[in-house]
Image (cartoon, rainbow, N blue to C red; front, side, top):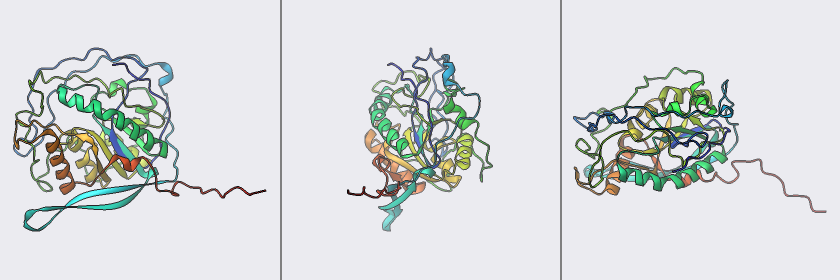
Length: 345
């Protein structure tokens, strides 16, 4: 697959949504080191751990001089406009049942950031990689629309920051003035028994739905090349950097997209658990995410139903969800100014 050239530019302050990443300078990455095969320990004894295929590092291609920035690059202009989010949550009902409730919630584009979580160029589970490829075109179109309306886009392809060092996108987050968070920012946020029960999907034995599981090794080296990094976008896999950038730029609303819903979307230092604890307004974009589910493991449901169950868990215990269409347009008249009609002769 050929890489795309990244467009330089900027984005503004506002909300946060999570999504994917594109490669630099149209160059292909080098070979990726292959670590020892490991097994998942996700959701074991009520604790979540990072899958052990994250070791090794890619060979980093050179970055063209015109893609580098010596000082902190400019941030996006603050512009008017409001998204109208149709949020969905689940609330406890009688007899231990849950009821879905919806609400209309306006978000200022200037206070909104979309985070693209771990939309890597490849992954050891080939069924997961196939579903990511299907998501990429729609995700890129949504990000392009949100970017055009003035929202901030932050690409978070964890473990690949060396690919983007020295670029305006990386420096925009890396050089943001540090803010003191109200609670510690953890490198990984495990299940919180004070807030949530264990996840409804068991991946302690297998998280991959490939018919025959291959080596559980690192295959990624950057964000998927089908996701453009452009304008005032940022790149970071650090919760501390992302929180600091948001505080410095008036961003209080975070929308998260990407993979995987029962792992990195919840557990990363910039994921749902951490951002919620930091007091940010957080939503999951439920039609642009995917879980790691093996139907051969408990609770023995299809991959699609397993992903729905994780989304329902998030709606019950952590934050609302929305559909990506909510970021395609702003409320009519909110982006002003309204110009008077031309004078007739």
